[in-house]
Image (tube, rainbow, N blue to C red; front, side, top):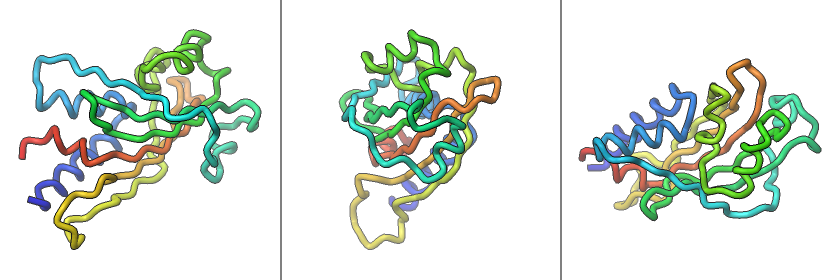
Length: 174
C-alpha cells in the first residue's frame, strides 16, 4: 500500500511542479475524486507574526524588507489540513482589494492573485517521507515546496514555503 501512496505523492509533486498555482493544483487534485462537485479551499490564518524568511528572499523578490508582508495559513478542505503555507509577498505589487482580502478573508493566496496571471517557479522540493521508512503509518508531513510567484508580466510578487500533509492522499483512487 505504501508504494501506491508513494506513486500518488510523486504524481501530486509533479502536478505542483508543472502548475502556476498551488491552489489550482489542490482544487484539481481534490476534484479528481469528486467530479462535478465544487471544491472550496479555505486559508485559515495561523499568525500575524513574521517567520524567518528564506535565504535570498529579498534578492528574489527584488524588494527591501520594509516592503514585504507575511501571511501564514493552513489550506483546509472539509475540515482537513492539506498544507501549511508561509507567504512573503510585496503588497505594492498587488491591487488594494487583494491586499485587503489577504488581511481579512479565508481565500487562498493563489485564488486572490489569479487576475494577475501568475507563474510559479519551484525553487526547492523535498519529499519528507519515503515508502522505505520503517514506520507502519504515514507521517503527518509528506512534501515541502518552496516557490517564487511572479505576475504575468514577470514581476516577483511572492515567495512561498509549503508543507503538504498526508491528507492530500485522501483524494487518491487507491
